[in-house]
Image: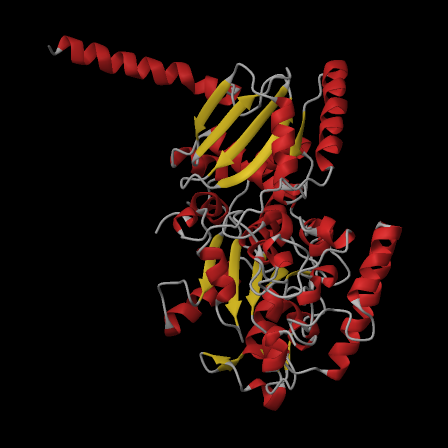
Amino acid sequence: MRKDETLAEHLQRQGISRRSFLKFCATTASLMALPPTMVPTIAKALGNVRRPSVIWLSFQECTGCTESLTRSHTPTIESLIFNAISLDYHHTLMAASGTAAEHARETAMKESYGKYLLIVDGSIPLKDNGLYSTIAGRTNLDMLQEVAKGAAAIVSVGTCAAFGGIPHANPNPTGAVPVSEIIKDKPIINVSGCPPIPVVITGVLTHYLTFGTIPELDSLGRPLAFFGDSIHDRCYRRPFYDQGKFAKTFDDEGARSGWCLYELGCKGPTTHNACATVKWNNGTSFPIESGHPCLGCSEPDFWDAGSFYKPLSTSTASVGQWAGAAVVAGAVAGAAYGLYNKKKQSDAVKSHEKLTVKDLEGS
Amino acid sequence: MNRLDDIAVTVEYDGKDHVSGQSLAVLSEIANLLENLARTGESSSIDVRSLPLFPGDYAAIRETLGTGEVSARINALGPTQIQETAIPGVWWVTHFNDNEETLAEFIEITVVPEIIPASMDDLATAREQLQSLIRERQQSDHSL
């Protein structure tokens, strides 16, 4: 796409039809939980977009976030949104390396100062002056501070950039922190998840391109359209929870009948993400649908919240009793249960329970 | 391997069609939206995949709405299947990608889904497009 042409002109030149564009807009609007009446607005605004510059910085990360986005099974749809931006720096994806790559970043910053979008994946180590992670001889801290200065907004992609993630997990040897602990004077959108759902990343970019603003955020800075509901709220196994039907092991009759995985450690009730509706691998399934409890990867400190395989409410109360109450009192009891679990989860965070082989065996 | 369906995993089916009772709520919502369409002409749509439906619920909704006379397949960024239901004004629209995996699925309550008709923008260049084809045809006929 040439710098001076609009997305609509570009798509026309590429032979992408109006119906294709409409299909993209309808799919995206649905993902962003926008009413269908917004589709014409999205189509019009996106059609008139002139590609903004995007700089993507990767710090203490595993590249899983980039993999999530680029291995998405809908290249035609995702590439549409990538046609709408100019990705001027991403050290894993760009052809240039070394001095030439850093030069590209500096040029992009100079040309679009104050207007470019900064995407960060990975946490930033602060211990020992940040020397545990450097790019081109500069610490992540130094580079983030410099690039953030000229950014219009920052998107923290993945749980590491949003909340510190795995590098931040106890005992946090590098003193890792999320972007929001360093940058205080720019709008920051946290797209958490380990990794985040690819369409959530593109959905946030689409919102920014369409409306020129950042989407409505929750108390943890995550877009409400994707993180407004808990996994549990939208889980297709929720009716089993309400009926008190739980799988007790991974191969019992309950597990085979698709019953609730709460007792196997599912963190769905305390986890906010769009997995249960958007799903993974192009809508094929999500972990619970594949028979595994939710790990809670889009929440802060998920790695330190006790065992993945221990129920949220630990041994002090039997899940059976609580679930019985939920059946009687319905949704209200369910909500109270959620709060109870949140407290249990934060207690677990404080005591930092380590995962043992016993935990994995479910004993 | 191009398709996830190729992965040799089978789901053990327990023989019961689980239902949550959500299908009745969705069908009532469609009835309300139909009334609104008839009264104001305003189209609306329901995003099927945003609803926590059991396979039994999904099947119940499809079965109740039935199959109507019109069926269309659009090839745009992968196929899109449009099926009129037996209820006039209610359409089942499924968007697929090139690997025939479902991207999005809607129940549209409208006179005709917006993706079907030609757009006024395209009509502006359509005549020109055809005339250039006519010129090409004339030239090739002359050269014979």
